[in-house]
Length: 638
Figure: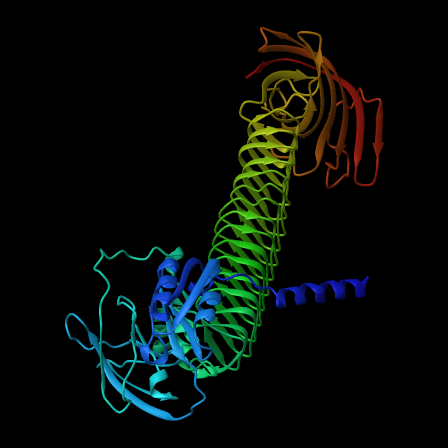
């Protein structure tokens, strides 16, 4: 079995490593229908761009525009159609709705280029503008004065520069002679009313995370925001953000395989990413991330995040998060979270959370929560919660189990077991605790605890103290009180005491009896008692009081500092008048247990039934005396 489990784990991990998914549709993957024969190459390219809904940018000197071509595309992909029209040396790059053409070259000649970027309307220099050489993905960002310096490689005519900034239209420039100063004016987008971004929990992306702002230069965040195109790389190696095989455009690159030494920063991953320190991606990760410290993803994760520290996905996650310290998902989680410290799912969760510290779900959990410390679900939990300290949820369809306290603001369908305390509005399945059970609504299935409270109990209550408004079952305890339950106040006489006042509370099936006998006789004897009883019906108005009572009798006006208890087994017949007034009488079996004796003579001092006992036993420190007596009285139900 161990080998089979190991093979299963390897198979699952292997599957996660090769998980990929189709990215959002790009220009090159769109389909077009174009038919033209013997037209100029420039016209054919124009027709493809028109049908594909994109803009085409290129330097006319790199293409034989006047050559005649024919195109016959019926739902063909843009990349395939364009490749059939263009020379082999031409490369294509996307940027937003632009498709840029440049010429590939093996020339390694370096051409220094400098210039300045300004607003086309105001002439004000613009900082934080991304300047990217299209054919080599080499790039920089402009400084506060709008100036930039860039070294290009290859022949001059093949170069194409993309200027991009948030709030401005992308601009493609084909520089002439490299020695000249390049002045570029970019046009702002049409003015629209500014709307504050609506982001989940006031966070829009990884740039809002403190650790990302600390480790990633501002220029890299500018590149990620400015560059609308997605560059794909089969592999990359990064030392720190901006220093790696992808250079300055790493922020716009989706990698199939990525290795980061200290900290990596990319647009996304479609395959696998391994980091000795941190992996940071501004958009989606489809595959697996392995990090020594943390994985931070600005959008969705499809696959797995595994780290020694923190895993953080700012949109949804489908798959696995395994973190040595914490896992966080800002939106829907469909999978598993396992952490040594804490798991947090801020959206809906479908799957289990397992951690050593705290599990938190800010919405519904379609699964279970298991933790060594606490489980908190602000929504509904479809299965169960298990913790070492505390469970909290709204509605729990399964069970809540903890060594500490369970709390549910709504309904618990499978019961609550909390060694410290349990609380819920409604419970089906019962509550068990060594401490307190409390239900503000209805409990079905019973309560077992030191103290039990329920507004309505449809079952049994077993504990030292049982409190309820209404109870339909049995309440067993030292003191049971049901506001709309069983209550009876009796006044009666016995063969021992002339007057006793007694209160019965609980249920007919089982109730507590508390009583007091005032000193009204000649010898000023007084007493108090506690007992339990049951009251089965006999016919329509008849009843039988069966009670077991212990009564401390003080034979004199003073307190007897000794055990002087009369145990009574009562079998009393009663008859109810008008359903309220009860007249009762019957025999009582009495047993006196006393250690009350004269300290000098050691004579027994209790005179109770001394002349009519049918059995008396004297031991070294204890006297027992048994006799048959009687009880008669009246009572009122209320």
